[in-house]
Amino acid sequence: MNRLWSRVGVRVTSVGLLVLGIVGGVYLGQSRATQQQGAEAKLVVQADADELQLLKQRQSLHAAARAWQRQAESDAAAKAAAEAKAAAGKARTLEKKAIDKKVADKKAAEAKAKEKAEESSSGGGADVPFTGDIPASCDEFSGNRAIGCAIMLDKGFKIDQFPCLNKLFDKESSWSTKAENKSSGAYGIPQALPGSKMASEGSDWKTNPATQIKWGIGYIKGRYSTPCGAWSHSQNTGWY
Image 1 (cartoon, helix red, strand yellow):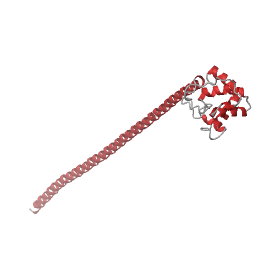
Image 2 (cartoon, rainbow, N blue to C red):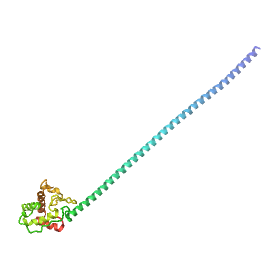
Image 3 (spheres, one colour):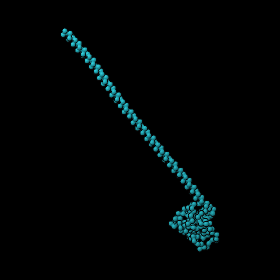
Image 4 (tube, helix red, strand yellow):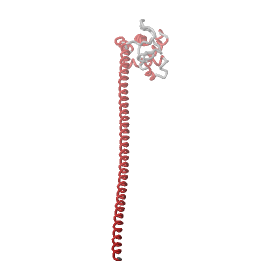
């Protein structure tokens, strides 16, 4: 009887141990499965986080590239605009220079033509030609003509040259110290061009008839030798 219960006890114990082993194995298997699932979940979460971070980096790179492209386009546009503005400015400058030169050349040509072909327009009235005989002396004249006659004699010319000088200065200015040709700028009794040339005879060249006449006779002597030579040239060309 005791042996029987002993055998039964052994079998029950074995069965119990077997059940416990099975239960423990099931639990361990479940635990391992749970752990594996947790690890896989962590890997998925980490992968998602890495992918999100990579996506953010790519977006940042794309944004930086777009910003750089916009800046480059803006810089290129600004440079092109500056170059176009500079080119337009140069073109306007060259055009203005060409126009100014053309106008200056035209004015110079007109002044030269008037100087050579036209009579002075500011002498005050028509010419006052000398039609009398050769004067015996300068006492026959008055005013600026008397001064001119005396200066001419002082310069070494004879009295027979005065009728020519009288006609010449009559034509140029009517012996007016303030006669001015508005077109050419010629000034004074001899119509010096420009009038400032007469400063070589004195600083009062604008108003002093003696200063103007001295310069005029000196010019005539140097270029035409005599007043009659200057008058002859004036009759042939309209200027002296």
